[in-house]
Length: 318
Image (cartoon, rainbow, N blue to C red; front, top):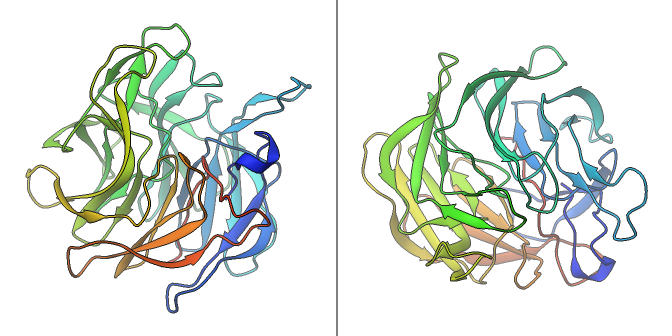
């Protein structure tokens, strides 16, 4: 859902694309968001996908440009356009979304636009059973701007790996983390250090989840905290960590393309990393949960440009 590509001069797009888990192939454009958004956060219930916040952007600076607080909902069974069903407490972009069976959560993010401060550490929650606003229930360990759309989820916890933050000046990235945090679904409690780390400090990755493991694909691996964004490398690494133990993430394969700011979705048997940036691409990569190894290119996000959307959000119906 949403994002932007290099052919539209940074104007966000509002397309909702769908591709099959049962057969490989290209996506189809089936519906629209309320407005075009980039840097969106997304999550899902068993019957609907959600997009929270994000940023509208018009390079001319026209009215209405800036961070949003809307919670938009897309019902899988009808495939009608998204509707506005509530708000998160803080407008902004670059947060991460996770979900339990009953609730959606939005974590961290920038409360401004363009990657500038202030960054948030809020954990915000709303119920899937009744449309309405989210409430601020807890905090992450650190202020964080991840640019990742979906976090890792087990049956009992949401997981947030990596992310970055800065001291206040635009694009002054003072910290980038390798820490994997986790938050419980059973209580409204702060996130804690899971005792696990990614293989390097990282942001802008796409996350996938099997029933037993979390996956972090691609993103920017930071080799220096010297601003502005000094020392980062965009890569195609697939990392994997277990939900049941405190083992660190390990490198288990590669995506077919180097990318960041892409979207992640998951079935029970495969994860999918789609589209992305640096460079813009429209590739749908498929990752097997049963066997470690490289991803395979199984289709394209089928938009008019060969450049696929970066900064978009992924939801999955499984």
